[in-house]
Amino acid sequence: QGAVKTPLPGVILQVKCNVGDTVKRGQTLIILEAMKMETPVKAPQDGVVATVDVAKGESVDSGKTLVTLN
Image 1 (cartoon, rainbow, N blue to C red):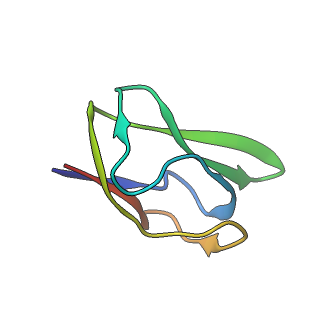
Image 2 (cartoon, rainbow, N blue to C red):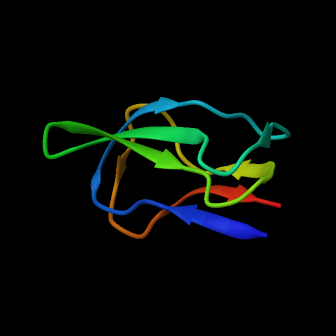
């Protein structure tokens, strides 16, 4: 079980997963816009999405939990 956190502050452009989705290590879960660049946030391991803690358009600070995997 692991929290996937944002590496830097920015705005959520896309949420590419839903609760219950099975994801593979390296799969893009969230697209974050930071410093005018799109930054994909990828799954650090295989797992199942337990929670999605952000929504499109939301501003996030560095270290915020975006998604939790089981």
